[in-house]
Image 1 (cartoon, rainbow, N blue to C red):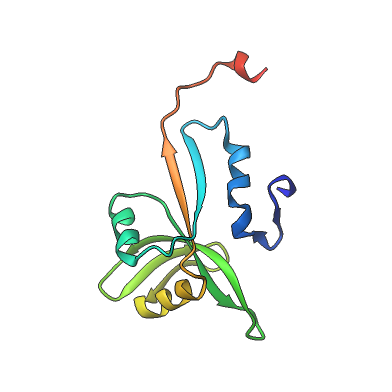
Image 2: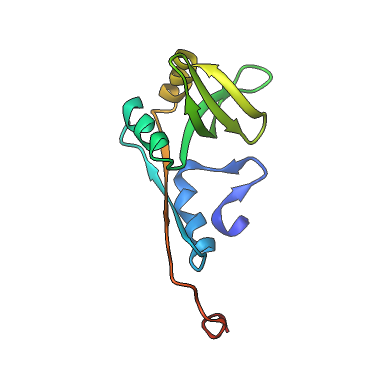
Length: 127
C-alpha cells in the first residue's frame, strides 16, 4: 500500500484519491473522492437513506489524549444515535451530538464513494 501513501497508521485524507489507482479495473467501478466542503448532517442522512457508502473523518484521542484523524463508515442513525463501523473498534453506537462534535473537529471531512457498473473486461485487456 506504500504506492498510495498508506502506512500502518492508515491513509492520510490528502492521499485518498491515490487509492483509485488500485481500483482502475474493478468491476463494478469504485472511486473515492475527498470532500472538504463542510457538508451538512442532512446530506449524510440522505446518502445513508440512498444506501450510498458514507465515510467520515472523525477526531479520536490516543492513550495520552492527543487528537488524531480517523475514518469510520456510517451505517445508520436513530433520532439520537449514530451507528458506524470503526476499523479499530468494530461496530459502534454513539450519541449523535458526541459523534457530530468529533466530525466537526475534523472540519466535517467526508470521503465520497462512487460505485458504478462497468462492463466486464476481457482477459486480453489485462495482458
